[in-house]
Length: 488
Image (cartoon, rainbow, N blue to C red; front, side, top):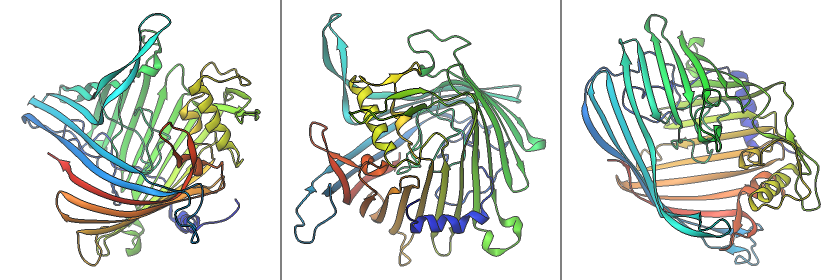
């Protein structure tokens, strides 16, 4: 490591107190109210069997809406210059407008149906359609997707079944998700509370109230498992997880198998530290997620071509690899303070500072179809998932004050993410002012650091209207307005 940042020091201070832990069960919405699966405050362990509603509620409808406009302007390719402030300046404006509408019916205690649709800006998407075997055309299609569509049933008040497209996830990590074999997308550290899309699946849960435990099995039907072939029992994904409450600690152990993916064992633990009988530990929660895989779902790479891509791509050797997260959260209601820090170990990354540039270049080459000079023996194309985590060690921290000056209308937060392997990262302090329930304002600045060609300077590339990279957006001023965001 070339240098140690304040964030690294903060993590080292926390490490002696860290243990293995799991946040509240992601299954809590199985037969009850659907809710966020993560929280910004310390999470305490819960009885995993206390999650099933027995009430018949009839038909409900509602949803969520998010609308905002943000001015994101800053200096591209360089740091701000006192002698020439306009040099490298680029304006930018982002709109965020999305909604999710749901219908939720539970005519009796043993049956439930849920449908949710999602749409947002832009309201149409471009897609390519074949006109003949050699020509194609671009058409616009409405930006509407089925986000959830499932039914819940109970069998003899002992087995709880859910079938259909559903949002569900494994793991306890707040910023990372190495052990989540259910969701279709990974977590985004800049928006860790965002709900992630789930697959079509059959889920069966058997609670054991006397043991404060659950056993949950999945049969997953992701489109990526089948390609152009019809699904078969052999091509499905299978997952099994058990979780139990032991004192203040919630433990889980699970396994996953799919013929074209690396088999995995996933273990998570979550606990508060109140059992240490010291007041300072009453507000601290620690958590960890461990994944043991036989092989890897990402590709192994080496070499550097004249165009800056890898020269060799292959599958990782069939042996056991460990991937893990380790984190802690602290909540002080009197000070309105929340702290969270999390470390990720990725055995498939590299400490080579030039690896991110080659990963991005190779992904771009495959996306454009220019793969000359690349020898690929893996049997599949190099994709975004192979390029997105080029480092071995990562650290992300969040500090937030829910009230400033005693006012619940004013809040402050700072998010800091760093690739410890190539010493690149970004930090975003932000101030929020919400004078009215449905209208708020945010002010902040995003600072990106690291050598050119390392991960986060590449991630924060500014582009022109044609998509051509212009350089790293080193400092960005963020001024936003949110309108009518919430539930309805």
